[in-house]
Length: 150
Image (tube, rainbow, N blue to C red; front, side):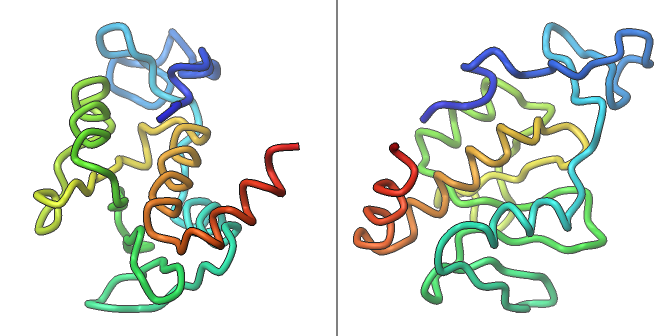
């Protein structure tokens, strides 16, 4: 899985004068993005993926491909939950524990909780796309790959 941090884009928009722990500040070696991702932006990223639909369930918004959930969250919340493999979950949490954490209820299945105020937008797009790929039918993923490989 290739993440924004692997491409050297993590923290490209930082303000070193911001207080430690604030958006745009730093904790350790990892800077936070200067601009927070909103729930609407998160939802737009997910709905841009083929055959994705939004459906309210359990009092939250779920994002699904052909009826299968790959991401969820609440417009009022400061974090979202995204499907991942257990290996990706461990990698994400180890690399950026201030951004990613073990998701409540579904974390044992590999899902991660993502802090919207701390995640790099491109990294969130990567994680969402990978979650969609893990969930979508192979034929749908193949069509997506064919359109985006050129």
